[in-house]
Amino acid sequence: MKLSSILSVLSISLLASALPATEKRDASVAAVAEEAKREAAPMIPTEPSGGGGVDACWVKLSCTYAQIEAMSMQKRLDFVRYIENVHLASIGAQKQIEAIAGVVEFFIKFSLGAPGGWISRVDAGIIEGQMRGAAMTLGYSQADGGNPGSAKWKAFFTGIKEGTLKDRGDHDKAWSEAEQASTEYGKGIADAKGNASGHENRWYQFTQLFRWIMRHRTATKVALYALFFPSNIPLALAAGPLVDWLTNVTDDFPAKIGSELAWGLTQFDTTLGGDFMMAKDLLKTFIPKLYEAYKDHH
Image 1: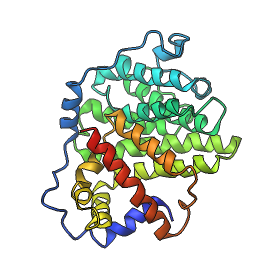
Image 2 (image 1 turned 60 degrees about the vertical axis):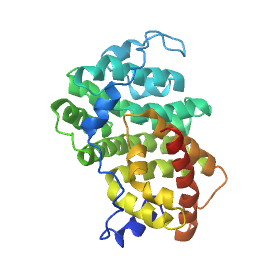
Image 3 (image 1 turned 90 degrees about the horizontal axis):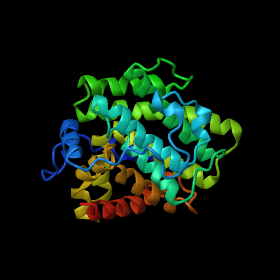
Image 4 (image 1 turned 180 degrees about the horizontal axis):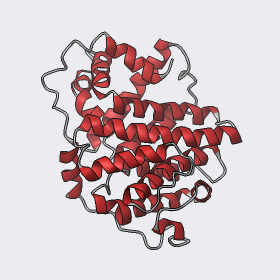
């Protein structure tokens, strides 16, 4: 059973129950954005640390899937930062793809995603989708590259530009659906070229879980409270803030540390496709580790 299904099953029977009074109300996307503005903006790369300079296709966001897939992960990180600071800043969306940057940082740290591999091909689909969506929003081009995520990213960035995604629920739904579409596009190409390793596939299931949580934050909070009360009361009471932190895509750290923890836990484990109780036990290992990272980051 998929991890998202585990959380869904746990939450359905408990949704009628209120969360603890100590849980904070959802922070609006506007509040998150205001906090982000107070942080020091990363430097705009004119000479990426991976070498090779700024590619010509970066200027008008016209890179092809093949060009992105041929980039090293370091260069992709530089590219994402370039998109944020040079292009998306003009519509107030310069922090909106930090979660994508965080996953690329994880790939760099663990030396994953060399061009031509399964991870590289999936990731290239994600970056291409958000790049083309940004280009379409900014009026550079309406070419979607055949990537279904492009139009969804355009809708998302347009919503940020026009101020129609200030509600956190609407924002997260639009973001997760855009990333889901571009992820599936990249995965389709990757699968056609070769199979993912067992480790890669198990880790991929965690990324699917992340996008599911973005669309079902309230259900996830209820499920986590039920899962850890009364065995871990501090964690149970922190379920709300923990889920909000994990799904804050304007911060690269939650995506990076979440990816690292998931990679470590899935190295030898084969239970992600197993029965309910085995997958539930895996979540009971993963979530406390994530909670410790959350506390350390605050």
